[in-house]
Length: 514
Image 1: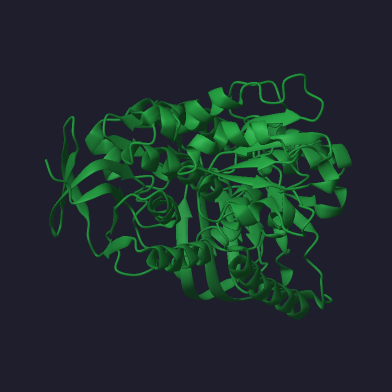
Image 2: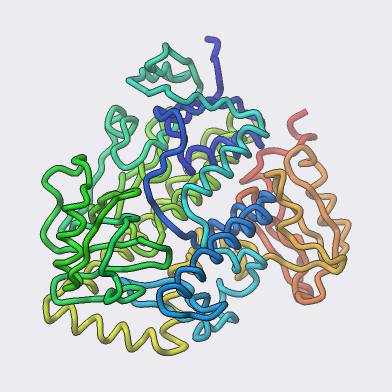
């Protein structure tokens, strides 16, 4: 049966666009269906964690991210100067927060594994979700991704050879369907994925408003007897967290009157909200599908897992899903890998998603206003005032603990590959822009290169020197930036396990196929 495209991606937010770009890099034909006709201006996440920055950096997007962050920080500084007479540079010493407990940059030990060797990506944080979506939309256009705005998925029929996707503008036949359509995913529901988890207990509002009487609001996050609130770091930005259960009608418009009442109740300050520029509400509903694939249908991002927004983990988790799935699905479509490669998607990403759900649940526990939870909060706050505590929390916030269970005993195997600085002044990420795997030969070993020669259509080979890692002989980097295999200088058999790793991830070499 003929297919109109290889993959239909339902949802054109950051995760859907990132996945579509990865699929195009792998040679797949992609159609993205997005029901909205233009970028959603509703306020969402205002920052990203290092893994997201790292993923985008590996695709050549660092300059664009840095420029967005520069403009954002200018706005932050202007707000601080106007609000408290702050000086230039004030407010830049924070690396994130846990349950509204701020984490100071000067208390982070950057030599900690997972925080070291991330390269320039470590300097990127203050990039809003809308900016990520805009930049990815531009990249998708450059790569020739077919993004169909104003088109909504209404149903689908899956069989052994593909999926017929019904939309508001007709049907599309594809080999695969991936749901990136958010927490209320139609794809997830229609495909019958199990979605267990915990029910919500809070109602949160985030908004950018016009208000008077804000002089007595504390900048940053503040815990009170009735909840938690945040003010800044941009003019009019407020967040309220109340433990009164989920909203009765989550889709009801967020009004100035409601925001004013909630902000007064939580902060105890008699503010007046005179206008609402953008507003949203969310809860701590925490659920995750039991598997990320059912036949020809897969899920990524919020379609696969939902949780509260604390710590800016959601976007990073979804971008990680897209990076992990994109190259694998493209390889299967292109006949460069067996269908079984897709089984590693759930195996690798489900544990990461489960951990993030627990991370956000623990933050809700530390925000509750009851005496026991406030006692816990005091303990966490004390830990966050130490180098060890802040380093641990920052590392976990940034996904430094992520390690896929891959064969091989090298410490790098299964981890995000360090952004090695090479002798020619370049960095490892400079060689990952095209979305291909890379064998980095640091020992000038012809035997290593010979083993990879049969994968010239799938794996790039680079012989280089890394002055800062003279212990390292070679690294096999997957297209998503994770280490598939590595060896140290002086190893008894430097090539041990390389042939197996190449075949496991990239199929048989060209000679064997022929």
